[in-house]
Each structure stands twice: as C-alpha cells, then as structure tokens.
Amino acid sequence: MWNEEGRAKQFAQHFEGVTWTLSNDRQCQCQADIFQDTEENWWCRVCPSNISEIGIESPESAYLMTELGILFYQHLRTSLAFRYALVGVEVDEFRTYSELLEDSSELSMPGLVLAVEVWQELGLASVYCPFSPGYVWQPYEGEIYNPLMTSPQLKNKLNELLAVS
Image 1 (cartoon, rainbow, N blue to C red):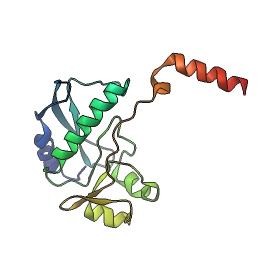
Image 2: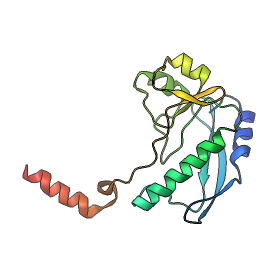
Image 3: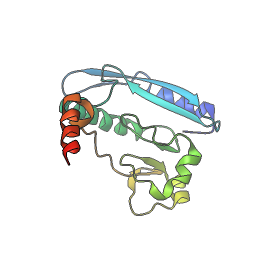
C-alpha cells in the first residue's frame, strides 16, 4: 500500500504474470490490480489463477494455499518498496493505513510484513523478526482448514449439541 499510484503500478508489475507450479502440478499465474481507498492510498491486490476462490474447503486446499502463500512471500522479498503486505485468504482485516496505525496495539497478524519505518512508528518490537532488508514480519503460519466453517452438516450437529447444554 502506498500514497503514490506509480509505485503501486510498479509493485503490481512485479507480480503480474508470475507463474508457480504447486506440488500437485497445478500452475497458478498471478494477476495484479491496483485501486485507491477512501484515504487516497494506493493498493495492489495480487490473486493467483487456478486455485479456490471461496476459501479453504478441505485439508488439501489448506495445504495448497499455504504452499502458494510461501511462494508469494518468497517473491515479495524481491519486490519494490511497500509499506506493508499480507498474504492469505480474505486478508482485508484492516482497510486503510490509518486503521493499521489505530489498531497497532492489538496487531497480531501472522504473515504481516511491515517496512521498518512503519514498524518503528507502531512500536511493535518483540513479535517481529527480519523479513528482508528494510522489512520485518510476523512469520507466516499457513492456512487452516476448519470443517465447522465449511460443512453445514457439522454445523447442524454442533448446534444440536449446544442446544442441549
């Protein structure tokens, strides 16, 4: 995320068209777009093709998306300057730069990469470690399969159990 459109475009170009082959031989190609938020900051969203667009629906998809997440972070290490980055499914937990700054006291997000200047401004010393020159992060923990989130049958069984207690 930046306050300059040109830098966002350059960052998008770093990912646009990058292709990775996952362990199941599926190829994923990156597509990147930029957009501006309500505070006029520029963002880059990078999405892979040929992978679930509805989230983690099985242990296999959690594994593949974790593998893909690691590949994203490896490529991110060679990218141009950015303020912060996060890889994952629905990673829009905060939507603006000011929200990041406001929520800094509760900011525990595995995989969050911060520019050192942002990290220092937030005063988040102990939970971050080096990511690449000029950046720190909370190490990525991968994606998680939660059967209660994807199975209506299991949700119903749990609801029945909760209704009894």
